Length: 336
Image (cartoon, rainbow, N blue to C red):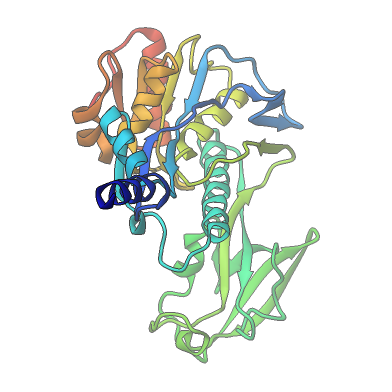
């Protein structure tokens, strides 16, 4: 009887009690040149959108929480999934809602970066706006969110980093001029710089304005990226490629099914991401033969690549575009 009770208790614990681990595995892939439930993933309104052939697929990782001991063992034995400590993906005290909001924010930022990088590559103009303003700081009551920054301290602002550069050599208490556009009207106003630490920012010698700059398209058309239930920044590269493909006549995929991953910044630099072994498996299962890999992921990708999957090393958007053109032309491309 004792053995029976212990066995039942063990089975119940193994089946019902969650363990502090998550399972990682291949997630769904999406053709960014296509649509989901009839809605295009990447849509251009107000500008000619050129026809494309083939597919540019973004890849994802499936993260499953609340798994039992027996469930975890089954996933691990399958060889398709891996287990990782829950704390690596969910910070103590974070709710599922908070995690979802954070992933959504990262995904939105990746979309914005992808659009800026693609438009820059295609030589479209971009502008710098005041994205956020610190309450009570010198810029408060002078600038409003959305104002376009034209000059700061006499220096032209054409990229977000120019704002910091323009304040180099200034000191708290110094007055500088700022020129901005609001509702199409250009205005100039003086700002007396403050001390950064007075507003919770890191200590620095330069004066503090209290403006969070961000780059936005300065074009008459609108680019929309729609994709539900996907989070994180790693789709940036493929989104940027899809926008370039829509706005140019290059037909980058050239009838082939190509997948990839990689975070992207507004300058088009492609950064390292996580979960690439699972993303490659998902791509291969979706019929992909060519996979775009961030340079810093190459070693990991090469060690875990499914048989028959060609790995193409990319460092930036321009290099990725050129690689796709070379693939279509039958030329050699840099591999991992």
